Image (tube, rainbow, N blue to C red; front, top):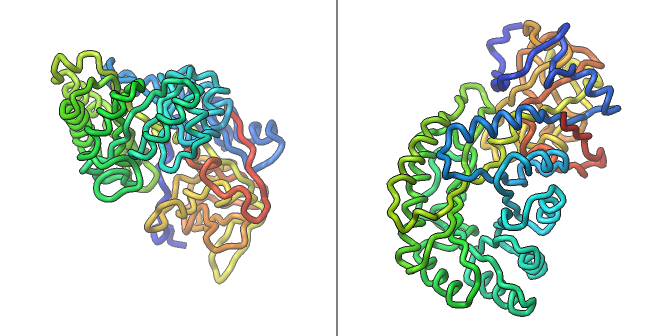
Length: 413
């Protein structure tokens, strides 16, 4: 079989090795972790990789910049508790995530809440808890002020801005043009004045232009534009700029040919942009809001091969996992075309690829493919498959209830 004719697999993140042909995760054999969990499928998250990633990021970014974790990427409770000790704040998108953030021990003053369509009970919970609301419209501000008055609590309000630019090369564009997110920039100054005049605690701006970009220069440009826009809007409104959330957008390599971001360049450029600010912004606090960049590469999804079968000459390795846990890896989470994630046979890790095989999940749908025509060592029923870059938007963004198979086990080591 000519392996060159298949589809390339994505790049496996650094930090993984093998012992006697078995994938090692943070010093543990994958087989031992499965035995400890009692079954497959299993998500494994490496605490050491989480700590290393946050430390690497802090070393590259200007000291003035705070690091926030967007918990939608992975809200697994033990992981959240670990992240609460590593980052400066949490960013949430629902009252459910607020409860998770509080349970993880994050101080309310270090939590912010963004997202369109916040219900009154969610606004009430946020105001009662004392977290910052990143308001997405004039109507949301009006509701928040009315709820604050009824509760006798001064709400902490920021404005999410829909900028006139987006993040080039991003997987999901969150700004620029007509969007359901945030308030168009030209309407921001008057709303900022209204918030201040109403006596609310003014918390500045949230500017999120896009996500999952691997274009270093595009991120540098978007951050510079965001800083300039925040300063300009505050000046036009005649209000102070106490805080500005610059959003995220930092991507990780998933597919063949992807190259990691140059974090050192991004940090240096952002440092220059912040150093150039006027004295009026000397006390402004800036942060970045990152999800997958902090946790994505620290996660591995382990699933067991149930059967090896041949159909019209093609090899199919049928697993007990699939898109109900790893929607993104199957190409069904925002992908325009299906490409292979980094995938390996965990029980023959590092062995030479000798055949082209498809790794298919257990669901009754042709969409359930964890790898398509990838080059793998020979594998049989009982072998383990590892899907890498599974720490973000795996368990939290997949249809675990689909066909009744239920969620996968999760483990932080």
